[in-house]
Picture 1 (cartoon, one colour):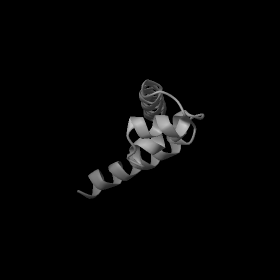
Picture 2: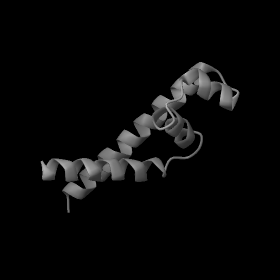
Picture 3: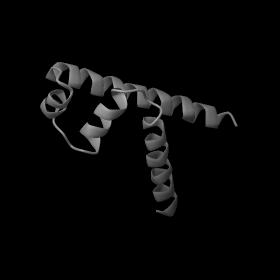
Picture 4: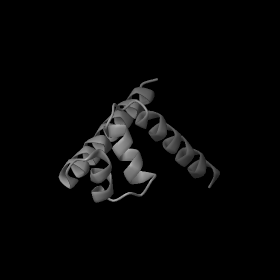
Length: 79
């Protein structure tokens, strides 16, 4: 259980660090959706954009984080 907990903590820490490497508006939209639990409609209103824009921006941010995480994991496997 201790190993699983440690791996989970490392994954959360790495994800948080990767989030901060994203450019705006990806970082902000992702944070609002995940941490602020805002709806896409609420995010769109804050940015004065469409709900579709908020949705696409969030999913692009999510994809960027996953891609960065994969690169980070593959890089650490080769050490």
